[in-house]
Image (cartoon, rainbow, N blue to C red; front, side, top):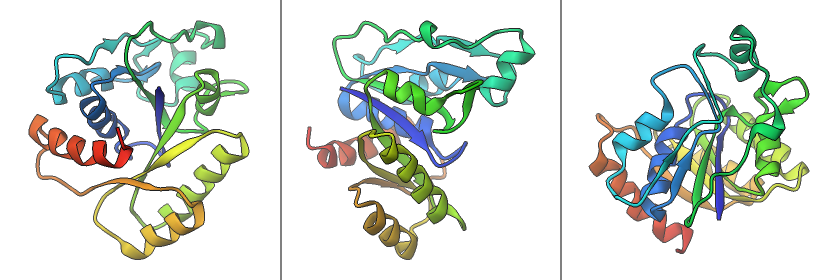
Length: 203
């Protein structure tokens, strides 16, 4: 199974969720487009404990910490659909997007198009802040309108029962995990969340 981790905006916790998924499933990891450093691949490698997960190289590794269409233009690089080829794997694959699902990779080419290209099922990360209800519902609607399967939602942040309940009731998506703010993100913390997530994924 290919799982695509997307979120309601940038810095929502996609990389942490990706590490947790890799730990729960002993899955491989791939970040097709990386803009800026340190890379998310380096972070995932640092946070996982299992010896099975393989980190696959990015299709595009860009220097500027910006939207991929901007970062690639700054380096004179054109991001093309045909250059995205799924890694050859013998396990599940966790694919981490860049920013939210409508972040542009190039003209008329968005992160959401990668999800369709890879026939992946989405793990939607929603961090809880004022305005996140609207952002989460819009993201879920955009995905559903493209007939993209959503496995479920992972909340990231201080619990907010009112926001969580209305999001889950409206989207009718299952809650896979709730990550609370941690003083320090370590391999041990990732492993604990991975154990919880594995139960909710029913694997």
